[in-house]
Image 1 (cartoon, rainbow, N blue to C red):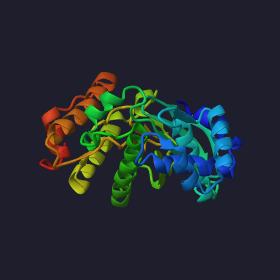
Image 2 (image 1 turned 180 degrees about the vertical axis):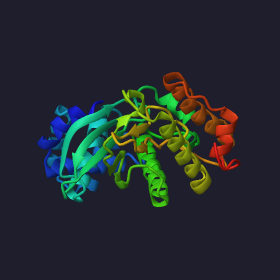
Image 3 (image 1 turned 120 degrees about the vertical axis):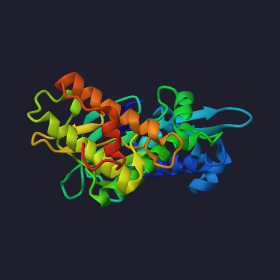
Length: 298
C-alpha cells in the first residue's frame, strides 16, 4: 500500500476517527480483530457513535473486518500510516510532507519539513509487504515470534533502525541523524545526495571506496554492528563527495553466529561494484581484515 493513498485519506479524519483507530490498534495487542465492545470501552465513545465511525472508516478503506462470531475489526496499513502521522504532527516533529524520495518493496521514503523549516526524511517501513513468510525467515529478530503481525513487524523494524542510527550517530559515523520514531515510521535528517548506484560522475572513486570501508570499519570496531545489506543502493553520495550510509533495520551485532559471513557479503558487494564500474580492485580478504580491525590499512 502506497503512502500516497494514506495522505489522501488523512485530511478527512476527525478526532473521533482517530480515537476509534487507536482503540482498535490497542485491542489488536491481544486480539487479531478487536471486538466492538472493546472498541466502545477503549475509545470512551457511545456505542452509536462507534457504529457510525466504524462505517465511516470502513468506507475510507482503513479497516479489515471479521463478521463472526461477532463483528470485530483490525486496522490496515493506511490506518497505521494515519495514526503515525497524527502522533508525529501533534508532537511537532512534522510540519509538512513533500514528494517521495523512494518507494520500494520494504519502505516508502518521503521528504518532509520539520517545525523549524529543516528538511527531514520520513521512512514508512513496509517489511513483509511483498512476502511476509519470506521476511520472517530472513529477519532474525522476529523468528521467535510465532504470532507476530505484519504491522508489529514493521514497528519492530523501524524502532530497530532508530536504535542503530542513535548508536552510530553518537559515534560520529556517517549516517542520518535519527529524530523520532513512531510505530512503523522513522524520522531522520535529510542528506542531500544520490544513491551510489546512480552517481553518473565520481571524480575520485578510490577515495569514495576508502571512505565506505573506513565507515564500515568504525561501525564494526566501535559499535560491534554489521549493516547486513550494504550495497550501492544503501550509500548516498553528495556532490562534494561526502557519503551517508542508510537503511539499517536488518543490522546484526558482531556476536551473531553468522556475523563474519554477513560482513564478508557486505564488503564483497562494495568491492564488486567498484571493480565493475571503476575497475578498482582490492583483495576481499585484505578488505575484510581492514574492516574488522586486524589490519591498520587497506
